[in-house]
Image 1 (cartoon, one colour):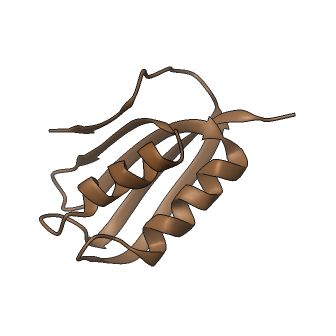
Image 2 (image 1 turned 90 degrees about the horizontal axis):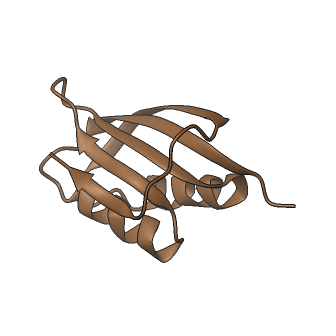
Length: 93
């Protein structure tokens, strides 16, 4: 049985102005994940994604392999019970 969960992740490194959010959105849409990605004021990028835990793990691996034109120094990630729903995956500003 599939376990639908919520992933909250903060990516630090060279992740703003390097097509990182666009690349995250592409992966999310390919994997049918909903949620959002947005730049934070401290230079990091936040992702909130809803989906099957296995698919979300794959999503993270894809982002690590191809972070746009940037590079990831660290990822702080947390899986929790799904608390919110989204219709699609979007880039927030």
